[in-house]
Image (cartoon, rainbow, N blue to C red; front, side, top):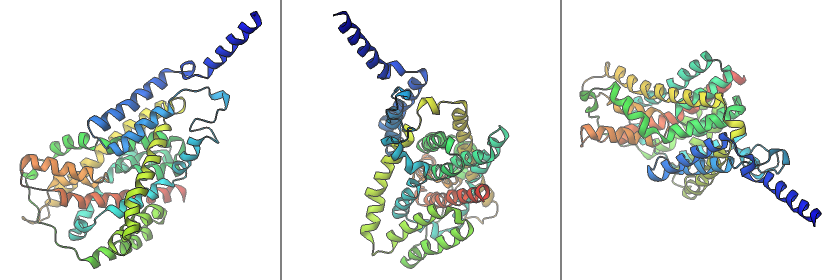
Amino acid sequence: MEQFVRFVAHGIEQFFQYTAFANLTIGHLVMITVGLIFIYLAITKEYEPLLLVPIGFGILVGNIPFLETAKLQIGIYEPGSVLNYLYFGVIKGIYPPLIFLGIGAMTDFSTLLSNPKLMLLGAAAQVGIFGAYMIALWIGFLPEQAAAIGIIGGADGPTAIFLASKLAPDLLGAIAISAYSYMALVPVIQPPIMKLLTNDKERRIRMKPPRSVSKTEKILFPVVGLLLTAFITPSALPLLGMLFFGNLLKESGVTKRLADTAKGSLIDIVTILIGLTVGASTQATTFLTPKSIGIFALGAASFVIATAGGVIFVKVMNLFLPEGNKINPLIGNAGVSAVPDSARVSQTIGLKYDPTNHLLMHAMAPNVAGVIGSAVAAGILLSFFMG
């Protein structure tokens, strides 16, 4: 009887060692709280729910504590685990080009083609990338790490993942979470900066309606765009190639089924996988470090610099533009590539000062230019540090 009792007690003790309760740390509780906050913001505030729900739930999945010495093959960093296989698409940069394919298939570049000078705003907003890069270098990050951190300023999660997987795989989780977090918080972060840098008169500037763009122009754009950008930065070909390919599927008019798949089921599947695995990569035992917190702070700085850079650049452009052709600086924020949320912010803020002044179509031009700009910037950084 005594032997049986000892056997049962030993079994219960061994079972308890395998439970999450026995392996729980303060770090796990912190990250679980973060995951719950993400889910709360997505559902109640509707901040990018298609991103924050998968990421938030992924954070919960990744922070269920387990006995790491038992080789259970359940953690995202354990070779052979299901999560590890799914995470392969992140660490090898497979998912980002597929996301870009879907973005290309759902993007209308008409507003950009009708007013090409607005492309400069997409380029100006990339100043956040290089600003954060210099700050990261200054506080002690390695050049490759600083470059990967800086790309957060482009407000482009797939591009951030793509670059980090090549230059700083050890910081991939922190960079991805920061990039997607700030993409979701666009409606919170950008308005105060836009209001601070503009006056009442500037916010009421009316822009000329965009001209009508022909079908021929729309078809030629992805072909010409690919050749121009990829010849400048071949390193960004996986992103730019898929972006322009997706857009050609949309605009050609003869591949509707392929375009619908790219912008529908394909991008939805990849978004689920990338969100869940990026969230799960925040496993407290490997993620919760001073470096991760520093990256999150640098990401905020990068995003603020990018937003301010776009708005200020418009104000400078207006000094040289004749009356009647001036640009409303409220669309300068849209140069970051958080499509279409930053363009919606331009529209929302503009309507507060003039309910009849609709800026959405104008803001979409720098917004889609920002997608191209962030990919080009990533290619430049990649060729510089891996050349």
